[in-house]
Length: 389
View 1 (cartoon, helix red, strand yellow):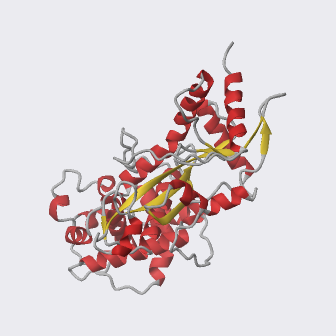
View 2 (cartoon, one colour):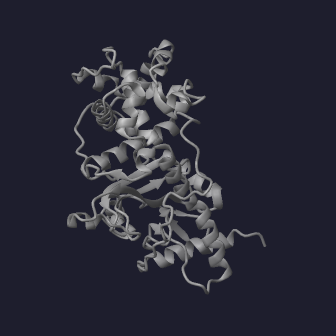
View 3 (cartoon, one colour):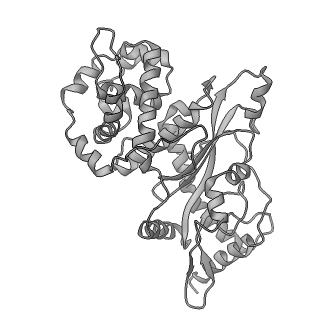
């Protein structure tokens, strides 16, 4: 995984997923929510669904229990005196629920505090401790496939989509808005092409919309090519340490190496296949572009779902800490994957538009590696050869 800038990972024993699932089964899931939901006040309490767990926290009870089991040890070991307005001390479940509400609602610290009878500073501290705990205990949910069998399953699913063989992922980027004072000259670097202050997030996803590699922390002024080139994933691929194996697609046919697909904002490389550009395209090129588009749409859907679910990242964040924001983005990516890994259907609906960067124009990268052109042509040739006579 490409690390989020500003995140320094500390070494700790990794809690395995199966152990965490077992621990989740031991959590008290009965009376806690009834008591917690009674604390809800303000506009949220007026909703018809205010008493329904999934409508407030946007995840299933199963996923919530699992998340609590992941962070329980870290939250217990940190001294805390977090209490509600009546003096009652917060449980681990309380802290996780408040943090999740802060991340998935997009509401301000003050609004969240009013909803649960807390000071806004307490909401901030609870959320940040939760972010730190997920960084340590949940990061194994966000990683590149670590076995040949897992990677083969991914390639098989991609091929079933539109017939693209040996495809290992789809890449895309999105902008996380920030509200920064325009008068401060130092903030100009964060101005993106649409004149918004933003931070870039680049993601490579699998067919199930699970994030497999992310890079964030770079200012919105950087192009998608520049962000890619700065990533650990790029360096590994260029060294031949990733996406290096090759496969004969058929006897006597072209040899096609492993690759990911991306739109025209990315460079054409031997391991990153982008669509054909230009107006005068042959029929085979047009067919290739259509299949390529349908395949890479999984990345657009993933980022749209991601920003729809974790709404703290959807709007403009006022004066965000530029070191903490990448870590919040990373944790939301981990939570996105946990929801998928748990088979959760409550992780937020995907916008029908599948557009995670509204009003942003398509960037165009003119760079083509000398080995990228024949790699794309071989793939196009293979797809044409599979057409019925």
